[in-house]
Image (cartoon, rainbow, N blue to C red; front, side):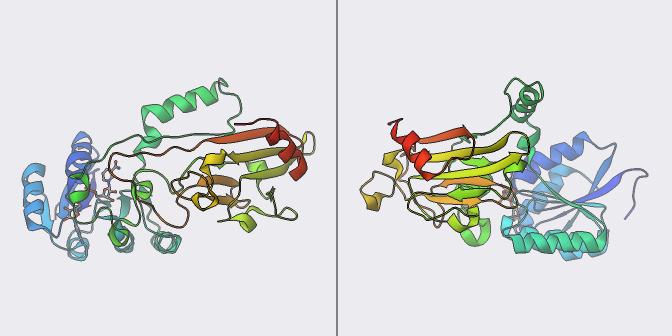
Length: 323
Ligand SMILES: NC(=O)c1ccc[n+]([C@@H]2O[C@H](COP(=O)([O-])OP(=O)(O)OC[C@H]3O[C@@H](n4cnc5c(N)ncnc54)[C@H](O)[C@@H]3O)[C@@H](O)[C@H]2O)c1
């Protein structure tokens, strides 16, 4: 295989929607730096169509292993179904290539560890596509935060209000645990359902407390539990002392089994280490189905307080602010 001086030799694995519609135009826009030399797909029709579109000089393969052995690319772009990402990323790293993989990079922390070990062994690097980090919304949010217009960010709320019709799910791998690794939350957003608080660094190791539970403890003690509210308190620094954040459900959010109108019972996703986090997770243990065209809503309250509040103080405060 010949190479043009100064340009990285790239291969794509998977030639479906995102590689044809996203990666190929991007590769074309950077032909001064990168040269597409190979494409892999198990579907010969898709591979042929892609190679016709991509132009001469792109060799086709039906397996990643055969491509890596024959081409030894500098860079591998992976756009296959998520259940294949770990295996193909590790294979490319072992062959000495750098990797840019579509999201999600893998389906579990164990898979991630395997990729990190392959990176360490090869010295190459595997990155993952998170294009929204660089989109106009994120750029604007960073500007506002940097300019001080938002003050110190304490709570962030992100909504992904996209609609996906039946055609989107008609590809063989979408909408199945084994091949997609989860549902829309995994595919479209980062892992946690419901409003998620990611605390500042000095909340790390903080104390969590809840009604009906004696004493406070690390957040992990409350992981997966249920309750109307949760308090998180931490010693911020030697000067200002402590702060408390309280997360409270509106009464109608509470477990349908408890007489509420909730569509699905919420459980706390809560951690004190390594990153302090609390989420009102409404799909903690299992996904739930919504009939087509239906939606659901939850209401929450977040209280940010000065000092280390205890259960009594939280209960007294919440009783004074009815829904
Ligand atoms: N960043 C984004 O905005 C974005 C958008 C869409 C999709 N994606 C991601 O891109 C990936 C692919 O999505 P898509 O919509 O292009 O799917 P797709 O079904 O259109 O394409 C997947 C391709 O992989 C091929 N394939 C399957 N098994 C293979 C194997 N073992 N070796 C080589 N090729 C194989 C299929 O034949 C198909 O051509 C997914 O991980 C998805 O989450 C990202």
